[in-house]
Figure 1 (tube, rainbow, N blue to C red):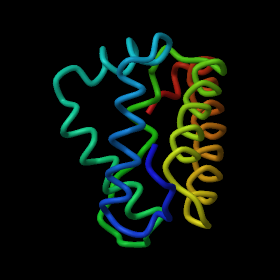
Figure 2 (cartoon, one colour):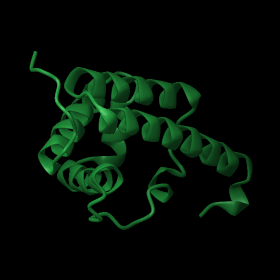
Figure 3 (spheres, helix red, strand yellow):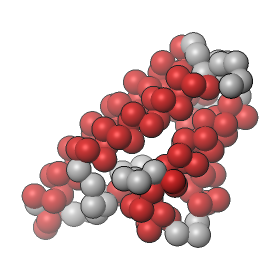
Figure 4 (cartoon, rainbow, N blue to C red):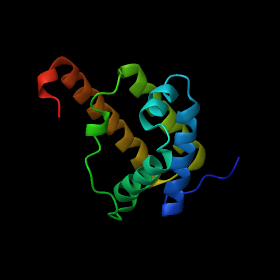
Length: 130
């Protein structure tokens, strides 16, 4: 196992994103959902995730977009978000240390909570879908 480092550069972001999504792709619970939705567009998705986390953690503004709409109609519930967050946290803890690692875990938790609430809202109010 490599030594843990701080998240300081785009290469650190790429290591985080690549490692995390390799785990997602082969995960029994999440893999089928992600693979069905993304199909052969993984390079495009990963590039988008590099830019998102680069903007969020490094304050290098390379991402512009709305993260929620692609997730609005996913067939997911609280168990999926809990597992997603568990995998994300495990990936961070294995690879990184420091303030940015803590911030990444905090932000991921906030996003999971927000996305879960919004998805539930749209499931219960289908006329209000994006």
